[in-house]
Image (cartoon, rainbow over all chains, first blue to last red; front, top):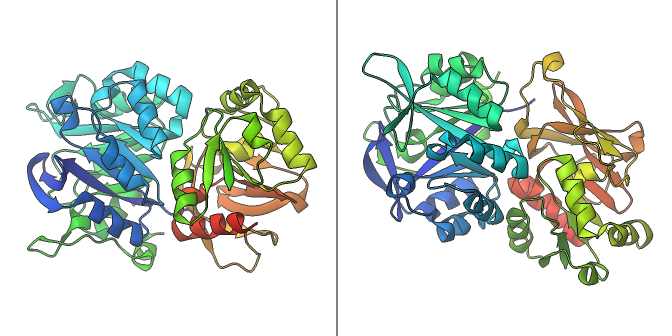
Length: 252
Length: 202
């Protein structure tokens, strides 16, 4: 049987690990290297590292930091943040990262195409950030939710897959950090129109939420932040990950 | 010392990290003078079949590799595209493969099996024969896969591993000193560490 992937997302701001709610109010969680070491021991399926201020600040990816992480991690790693050109993509792959994740730069379809032609679609992931606009429709955003793309999530997903993206992360800004469950409708609207794996992100509060978005949203994988860095109602900081047995229980 | 063939189509950093972690020594190289003296090789690769083969042809290394692998019979491990390139040909491209395995590379049929492509994620790997890397009695093993094409052969003796995705497919081939893995042992936690250690010991 093929298991779906459960992917912790680690958000980097400055030198520290943070967690946000609706892309806002970053709360300091701890040392990123330490968190990665714990996830490594817990044999997580895959890890996503997002530098949440690189694109906004127009700064380079923090190569040394990425290097420190990948040299200790024997699981696939995706990196996103501040990537604007093919030279940076090459440098990140050379460090031993498996996937680059494009959000702000995904509006540059040429970059997707070029990167996919060299490294293969499977290693080029586009993260689509979605939030409700003033008119109640779900719009696609980039630059940490600040700029809007004039297309629906499903239209945009088709576009980036045509360009060469081999995987889509569909992330609800409205649900992110709220722990109230994934946006299942949103996930489904995208997973129905593309044939590449779709990763649901934003809103996971428990394992049941994961089960629901896999079953009803037809996600191939899930990503989450809060449930892997917080424990309990008080949201005490504790890096954690479900055991294989716990994940088997929500498999079908 | 393991020499990792750096022909310009692959994510080599993670393989280097793995070999270092398990206490081995390795070197990335595309230098024929170095490879001629190698005692163990890894042929990595990600991306398009023709791109990989093209790069390998351009590197000029193929005659030396054939001598090392087929005449001197030193151990070699192909990973992902590196494994596929060891086959005769691929549906993904036009260029001939290395032909070290009497096998071909085919595309997953997403409609017939209702599966998403690429096959991306962790999956079970069953050992089909005893090799230096693992035995049929090995416990359930899980490895990380990322691929849209798979290897196929009519010679069952060559099949080292099999995996189910929609249908059952060949996830590893072996013929004497030549090992080919469709999955990524360098990214597969303890299972990958175990396999890579076994390769290191060869």
